[in-house]
Amino acid sequence: MPATPDDLLEGLAAGREEAFVALYDAYGARLFAAACGMLDSREEAEDAVQDVFAGLVQARARLRHIENLKAYLFASLRHAAKRRMGRAKTSQFDTAEVAMPAAGAGPDAEVSHRLEVALRRLPREQREVIALHVDAGLTFTEVAAVLDLSANTAASRYRYAMEKLREAMKESQRGIV
Image (tube, rainbow, N blue to C red; front, side):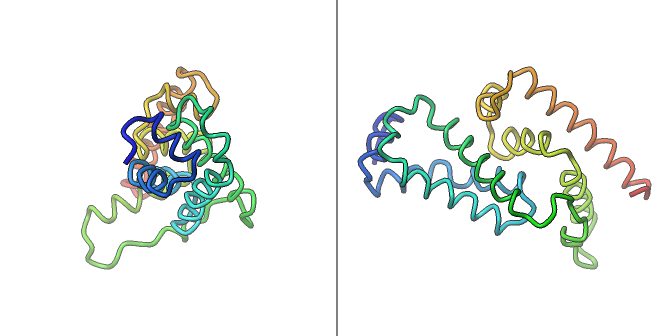
């Protein structure tokens, strides 16, 4: 199994299956979590992650020249998610698409549902930052590299998103939404 990012990139460029497996083991769950935050369905998120790995296979000859594999992966995910969003019938989120918690599921399930609805109502730019920072665990510097922004802009979008989420949660608790 490749030990360093350079070894991993060499293995990917050479088309070694164990390199792709190691890459998936290292980043698959975080890519999927970020994709779920960017897209409106688990199926679309799964497909976006698959698109990233298929793209790696197709572009393997160029992989030796990548300087930051993590940023490359999440930038590829962002592009895959945008392509999938472009194919969607509507860009407007329907809150009915978020499954209601089962009767008697408890207060945590209800809070989780309200948060999911609030997240889906955020502007796409803010959802991307939340998905990359919270779900994928990227730093604001890494988020900025993926989104081609300054780190300050990434941090500001995160702050604005968190303010909107706090307000939405307060409103939903009061029964406004």
